[in-house]
Length: 125
Image (cartoon, rainbow, N blue to C red):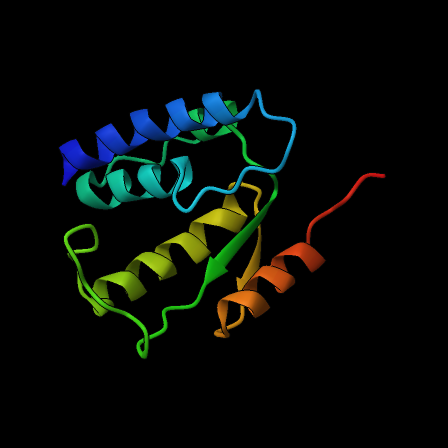
């Protein structure tokens, strides 16, 4: 798990740097905060706040509630629902501490979730 989390940090930074040159919105399904949180969970190392501060995402983070009715495992998502709930709990605790505002997506069809996100994006016209 530790090696996986460290590699996830590297990939998240690469993705962040790649997206930073884009002029449009870029959404990350997972990112640096998730990876740093996973590393802290796997090793009990302190959260690497300096790493997070150097690679800041937008202050608003959209999270989905654990949703047992649609949760499933596959080769990419090997952990069970209880692990997903524990990870959600860790992230909802950590994100505000490091300066992020959480918006919880409704357990709703994809179109409604997308509409929710677009209604909560800060536009500068």
